[in-house]
Length: 350
Ligand SMILES: Cc1ncc(C[n+]2csc(CCOP(=O)(O)OP(=O)(O)O)c2C)c(N)n1
Ligand code: SF4
Image (cartoon, rainbow, N blue to C red; front, side, top):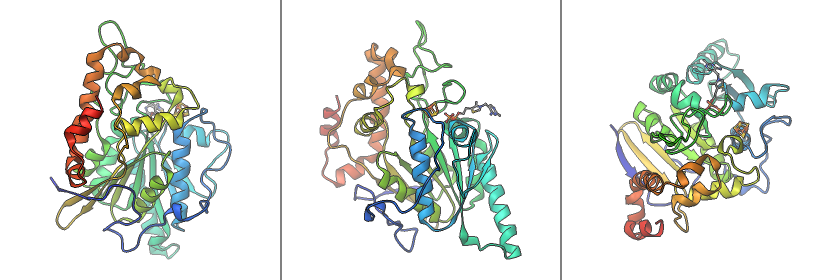
C-alpha cells in the first residue's frame, strides 16, 4: 500500500515535484506549435479518440523527442492505419490486442540496444503505448501490470470509450453500471451491465506506477500538460482519456462538448493526477477540475441512448449516483481544505 497525500490547490499545473522543470503549457501559445495525426483518419463523425490521440501526439512532439508509438488493436489503430497511415514521422508498431504493455518493454529493449551501439541517446525517444479500454482493463491487463512492475520508462495511454467498439460494442471492465451493450443487453430480467466499472488509475497505482492521470480532449490544455509530464517522469506512467463514441453510446454526433461537460459536472469523469514519491511510497493526488454546479447523474444519462433502459428505473439511477458519490468521497480532504462542505455539495447533486 502507499500513503495518500492531497494537493490543496485544485486545477491544472505544468509543475510536478517529480520533475526539475515545468512542462510546456500550451496555454502560453496562441496556437500549438506541432502537428498531431496526419489527415485521412476513418473515425466516425464526433469520435473522441481521434481528438485525444491527436492531442497526445502534439504534446509528445512538444518535448522535441522522437515518438515511438505502440498501438493496440481497436478503433484507434484501425482508423489511423487502414488505408493510409496518419502517424507521419512517428515510429509506429501495431501490436497484438493483449500486448500493448509488453510491446512497451520490447521498445525499451530495442532502445537500449541502439544506445549501446551509439546510434541514439537514451533521452532522445518517448516510448508510448496506446490502447482501448477492452485492450487495457481486460485482455491487456496482465501485460500492462507486468510492464508497470518492471518499472521501465514510458507512457501508457488508455482511450476509454467504455466498451469494445471496434467489434460491436461489447462490455468491458470500464463499462458503467446499467449500460446497454451487446454483451450486457437491457432485457426484461437483466437490465444492462450489472457490474461497477473498475478504475484503471487505482489498478496502475497498486501495481507501482510513477504517475497516473485522467484527462479529456475537451480540456486540451490539461490533457497536453499531463501527456508531457507522463513522458518526462521516470518510471511507468498511465494516462486515461475520456473518449466520446457516438456510435457505441448511441448519441448524436455533434454533442461532444455537451456530453463531456455533463460527464465532468456530474463527476462521472474526474480529472485528476497521482504522483508517486518512491522513497516514502507516498502518492500526491491532485484534483484538476471542480464543477461550478454539481449535477445529478440523471442529467448525464439523458443524451446517450445506451442508458435509455435504466432511465426508467429510479433505483438503478440511484445506484449509479451512489457509485459516483462513493468515488467522489475520496476527494473529501481537498474539498474540506477549500472550505467546500461535503454535505452541501451532495445536496446539490440530488
Ligand atoms: C487476441 C484477439 N482477440 C480478439 C480480437 C478482436 N478484436 C479486435 S479489436 C477488438 C475490440 C477492441 O476494443 P477496445 O480495446 O475497447 O478498443 P475500441 O475499439 O473500443 O477503441 C477486438 C475484440 C483481436 N484482434 N485479437
Ligand atoms: S465506433 Fe466509436 S470509437 Fe470507434 S471510430 Fe466510431 S466513434 Fe470512434
